[in-house]
Each structure stands twice: as structure tokens, then as C-alpha cells.
Image (tube, rainbow, N blue to C red):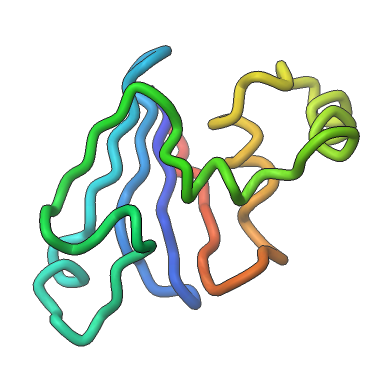
Length: 108
């Protein structure tokens, strides 16, 4: 199981976890979820429930990845399967992302 902190402008929004090959969970951090002034991480993950589950990497996080040749290059340089989107997200979305959201790996 791999997990990562989801940060918005450096502030903890929630935890993204890959529990298995087809099991992903995003859970809002309690303080963020309960604060009505804090926005949802995305329109596809509204603050109507605290935990979301999916068989695939949530589209919002998948869209933070590079595409095409850049994705292949990043996978090769990091020695990761180019279809291991969660690992690539952990390696590439911790800084210099488009927007306010960054991903920070949680050591096992």
C-alpha cells in the first residue's frame, strides 16, 4: 500500500492511497472537510463525503501527470513502469505543478 499527502498551497487537504492494483482511496483530512471555507480538491471530489473509493486513479490526479513522450521519458528516468500512474504521480507532482495542488509521498 502506498500513500501520499495531498496539499493545497502547502496545507494538508487529504490523503491519497493505493490499496491494491484496482483500489484507490482519497480521504479528506477532518479539519479541511469540516471547514466550510476550505474548497474541495476538485469538482469531481466534492466535499459531500469525506472518503472516495475508485478502481482507477481518480481523474483529477491522473490529469496531473505528463502525457505521451514526456510520460515515457519520466518513467524511463525514474525506472518505473509507464502504466504505474500512482508511482509516477508520487515522483513528479511534489513541486512545480499547474495549480495549487501538490502530492507528497508518505514513507512506508
